[in-house]
Image 1: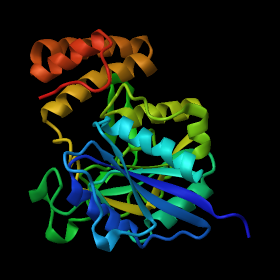
Image 2: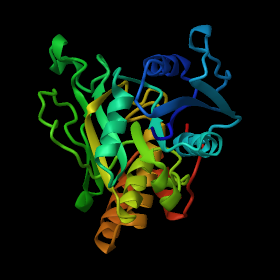
Image 3: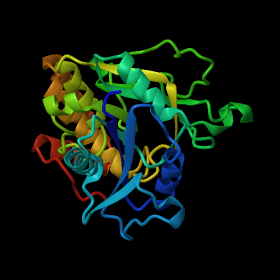
Image 4: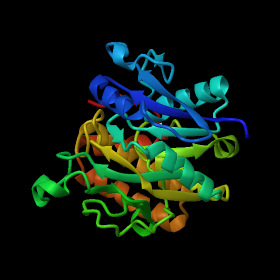
Amino acid sequence: MGAVKHVSIIIVDYNARDYTLNCLESLVGQKAAGYNFTALVVDNGSKVPFKLPKRLQNPLIEIIRSNSNLGFTGGNNLGIYYSIEKYNSEYILLLNNDTVVSEDFLRNMLKCAEEMPRAGVISPKIYFSPGAEYHQNSYKREERGKIFWYAGGALDWPHLVAFHRGVDEFDYGQFDNQQHSDFATGCAMLISREVLEKIGTLDKRYFLYLEDVDFSMRVHKAGYEIGFCPDAVVWHKNAGSSGGAGSSIHDYYQTRNRLLFAFKHGEWQQWLTALRLAYRDFFSGNEKKRMGVSHALINRYGKQAVY
């Protein structure tokens, strides 16, 4: 029998303890033959330090703390460095704290990884948590819990848009034969150690939003595929700790980071599109979008004060 491999599941918490506890409860019973795992909670500078209740105090769960908010990129990178140094993990699984997973989630994710050796990163099938759908009144009660948030990702390069395949659709099996994707979502992505050693961690300049698409592009450029695992299921509350679409944080970082992404990975056609979008957002957008454009043009990235 071969040596048991290790998986580190990294969950970044920022002032969202209840979400994180629900996520951890769905992980405790996970099993996968040939693998051990640790759920590592990165307390990302929460006002009240994250602590486990007695019911969740066990060797499978560990907490580390940053004294400041490092963002999605910095919080996950901290967890990645710690996990590899302490556990020598074969895989790193980034998992949003506002999720819960199916009971066979980890087993099926690792099975997909073994069956798709060229997939350096794999994301699962992700549904909206019941009641968290964008258009809640559009679904029957019995359909809730099977409305797609993500069934793979697609990049629309001419318009510089990254979108989720299947979003808002009821799952009747239409994506069950899909195996590949343009990009993995940072909501839940299994990364091989080999990929991290070749391309590094998340680009901290993004801080929040589009860092997963950027990472996926780097994975492709390194010669790997992005996998989609329809047999592993996650339910997602969607932006539980960042304010969600339309918030000041969302408007600023999405606007700024889209320009960073275009100039980093695009060619002259995408650069022209980026400049056109920058012009629109600066002259017709709200204050946070104008700020995002301004900061992108002067190369001001990372964490910024957004209110």
